[in-house]
Image (cartoon, rainbow, N blue to C red; front, side):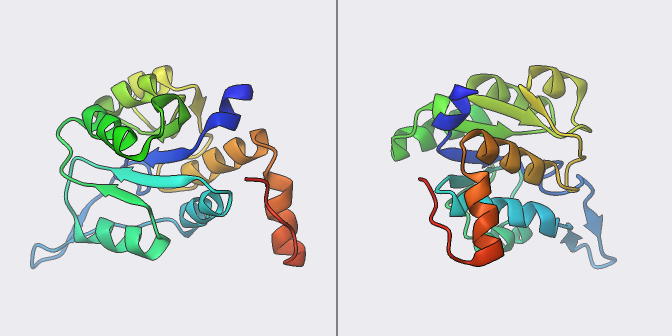
Amino acid sequence: MKYLTQIKLLALDVDGVLTDGIIYYSPAGDAMKGFSARDGMGISLARMAGLKTALITGRRSPMVEQRAKDLHIDYVIQDARDKLQALRQLCRETGIAMEEVSYMGDDLNDISLIRNVGFGAAPCDGCEEACKAAAFVSNFRGGYGALRELVEYILKNQGIWDDIVNHFLTGTAEFKQ
């Protein structure tokens, strides 16, 4: 899968991809979301392999800001009314072509991104239309390892996965970037 070797940016929706899509509210009205540590490790692995990372979400949330900070995500775009326009602008600013982007999204407002990037993906519980548009549909639900599976798939196809695993086994491997 030669086109996967061209991926330089991993862009992601948040609700339904990094989370299970459920937003909890406390009695005081505070919103809370849960994030998967496995997906967090997936982002860390992508960064280790030299991929840039981005979150593009239609909502604004301090929880998203904190999670992005914790994971050292390169670009965070919140309140995106038009996610495709936001991604195109990010690509212009960074010099990364849309063909060099992998995007994972789960709902109708993600379909245009899934279709217009080099490698579109969806979690298995994404809406039917998002899954049909995706080149890769994870075996996992959003917030339960879907992103981690995508990252492993990309890195294996880039020929980097064994080096990363070896690094964790020995702490000495160099990465091909």
